[in-house]
Length: 449
Image (cartoon, rainbow, N blue to C red):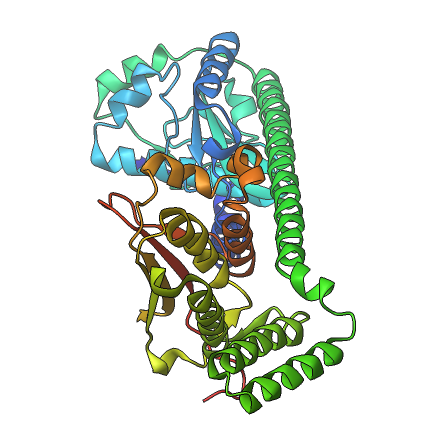
């Protein structure tokens, strides 16, 4: 069924000789970017591209189709000739058509210029590569026109390298007579026009996409700078007591130790314990003021000292308990993240109600994370107020009352150190009481057991 006309087979020979390099080029195109290759739909508005394709086809009188980097149609065909539609119903001829298109597209990509060739059906086709900053993202396949025989003889032949004899298909020969006529000059002009328009639009869209990515990156950078600034401000607030108390701390400890010894000599055991607990509390604050990370055990001991002092003040109005997993004692823990919640329970539960109240501190492992629970049996917090408690706007409304500032500072610091998956949450839907959960990674300090 195939009859050779000895036309120039430069296109077919070049592709055969460079088959391995073309395969490498195709693989490079598939992995050209770190994330994923650029696709036509990443660059173009596909509805607009369809209108451009249809307008181009109507203006030039040639059929046209945009294909992706692998030769798959990305749009609907424009002005596909009845002859081409008919011969593609024969599997053998359909294979020649698709192979010819594939050769043209790959060759145009390799030379980075439009390629004009004669298909196996004797019609002139063109392949116009579309590239974005050197990356091949697809092509425009167009043509399906007849040109004078002497001009067609100047063109290479696509797959299978020769023309098909349709003498056994007279209906196909009749349909071929209806294919529009053109000239090689007009075909070349159409190819250059589409090459210029498509690649200009591709580069323009890619530049806009890049500008948008840069804008989003800048926004994220500004948010990170703002978040860092807030975290540093929260850290300064957490260290405020230490900064105020650093006027000769050794003098404070000497005085406290002297008071403790006097209390012991006088038999004032409770006063002695009060002094020593306060001394440990002050020492913890001063010694860790310049280091925002401590062992979890030290943070919990500080909470115990604070509660012991409050117990002396509140008497039977305050009860407290610790239910802690000792295997977590060496965990890497930010400084002063438990006490602010205990202070809230003291102020808004124990002191506000003046009835016996209990505060419980519990630690447990949760996969690769560590959970610290602070629970009281007060009247609780309404769910809508819980939502506001960790919100920055709440600080403006309630700052005069002192509620929420320490909570927000702890939450900001934890999110700054560990990311949005960590921080402070309140259990909602409780009939009474408040249940705070602090989530941090379960990591140990270097050298800890």
